[in-house]
Image 1 (cartoon, helix red, strand yellow):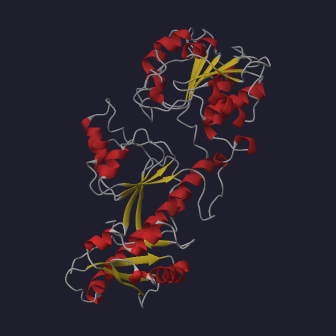
Image 2 (image 1 turned 180 degrees about the horizontal axis):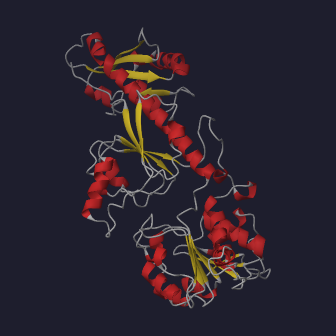
Image 3 (image 1 turned 90 degrees about the vertical axis):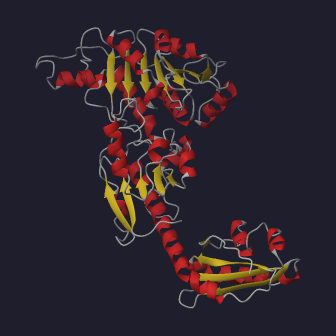
Length: 495
């Protein structure tokens, strides 16, 4: 760890400017925080200009650390290689399809994730509902948003809202008909956790039939997900007692049988455009398409064509190829209320944007940042003591081998660490190849330990897996609850 203090941290894509309050307790001597409330164009998108790419590099270049919100800013390898100062990314969420994690690893960039389960130390908002089983009141905010979009389409909410607010004349009233969902069929492209939760609502609230497909989905797996969602494996919704509640069908079967198709697929190179002209042609003329997963899963040009010509009942989108949507995007500029066009409902990637969710993510990020700063301070402390430690080393006869270094222990467990190490090495001289073990506590800081170990030669050291006993103890978790940080990399020396 080569970071120095104060850490230069950029908080990216904080549209609501809420991150700062979660980091305000950190002293400015340890971290300097800059918040960006906008998102610059994606570095690797084909429509991004060279000037826009350069602007993104110049924005990120000064910072040692970045705090991100999901994948609002993608990190391809070409961008990462132009950020030599970057040492750590504090991420939120658990999927990073647009990040080049392999390049991050090769460049030595650490990624600390905030999965949304709450701080591990009990502080903050507590356990997130996302971490609970759906039968115990758990759930994902995207599930709620999926149903908001489905109902907005079926009940024609956006158009009726515009009518009542006078946007179609002061006398306009009941210009369209709503569509009932009872007994209809919901098709799911991808049946994971969110998909199964969406299906659960469909069955329990509207008695809908469920058909589902993905490239590797089996009926056995679908049955497991139905049971996990608290539904009967057979006979759920309005299906017969001998029919599966979550029925696995072909891809064509999902699009041709469903009245509503909802996309819940993981984005990858293989899944881009998984919904295109063919799939839209399979849909019923009255069918609705809902996408809350990732924009590129649906071929945008094919969908625009289908909607402009009224070939399907409508679409509700929360995700797009480019986010935020550019001002010249056809989604922003088309007159979707014109005669002959399909119903269209658009939201700005709000599926996960709940106050509670973002609060927990930033609380977790703050905890990750606290730990990182503590480690940086510990490393600096070890570097400060390094020369003293080298001077303390006793002379070693020719041919012998020694290792030495510094351990920084948690204050609550420093005594136990010392006791366990002393007990573990008490009989060490009787082991083949070992000569001497020593650990001493810094007189000025009782959480800092100097250790020194001697062996008859390098070969003897190698028999201990080429690491000192104290590091092996920490790695093997033999301290029985003792927490310790091994700060400085081992520096073996033949003397």
